[in-house]
Length: 267
Ligand SMILES: Nc1ncnc2c1ncn2[C@@H]1O[C@H](COP(=O)(O)OP(=O)(O)OP(=O)(O)O)[C@@H](O)[C@H]1O
Ligand SMILES: [Mg+2]
Image 1: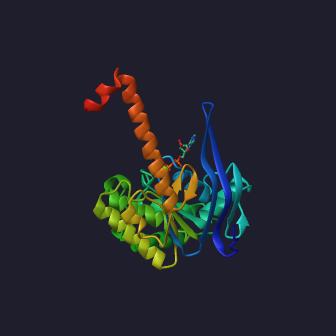
Image 2 (image 1 turned 90 degrees about the vertical axis):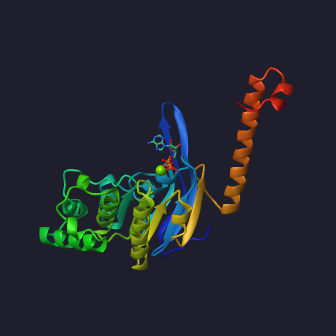
Image 3 (image 1 turned 60 degrees about the vertical axis):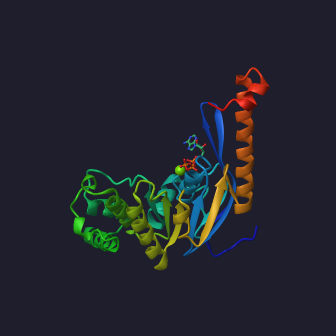
């Protein structure tokens, strides 16, 4: 694979194996991925194909079992947990499907939170940055509300403000519209589009093809790998075919006479 030295993110043969109850799951099976600064990338694929796992590794919330990952030119696959936490805090903003705001902190306190883990940011500077971030998402009128007092769409806007308050190099969003109705979903997508137009690098997992269309580049995953659209189509057809075979085998086992089966509706 060609190496792009200017890539913000560069992954080579990233693998992730989970071990649980003596079951080995190959959640990522050799990921090659390069993302340039300022790019907007969408990731889609069937449930369980490894999208969230990939995002967790991209965001240094988890480490790969194998492979190389360079973030902003730095090899990050083997660094210590505290270094990882520091880089995550400086470079990465997360937006989750379930908003993940802290219930007993106010709106403005939630948004300030990432900055409290940074050295040398005064209380005043924290508050000013949080106010600016909340203005950008149109939530500056709800500073002292608590998350439970906000609608889902408003909570997600606050979560976007929290993700961007530290001016991270990259925003990672895992199904950011998954818990929103279409109106609020569109509002959050418009917000991400605006941040992208302002230079943000965005990597978003989504099931929704309409939302994937907002991205500059769409990638598809299947069984822990990135596949092109044509391969995805073929894999889906094969899966469909296997399913049909399983259905006919199950019916054949149930029906004592093969003849009956063709004549009896599948009730
Ligand atoms: N902590 C874990 N321990 C064991 N297995 C895990 C763990 N996390 C994920 N997996 C497994 O890894 C695979 C990929 O999971 P992942 O959450 O990345 O899928 P996904 O594509 O995000 O799915 P969805 O669309 O449902 O969110 C799944 O088979 C899942 O069961
Ligand atoms: Mg997921």
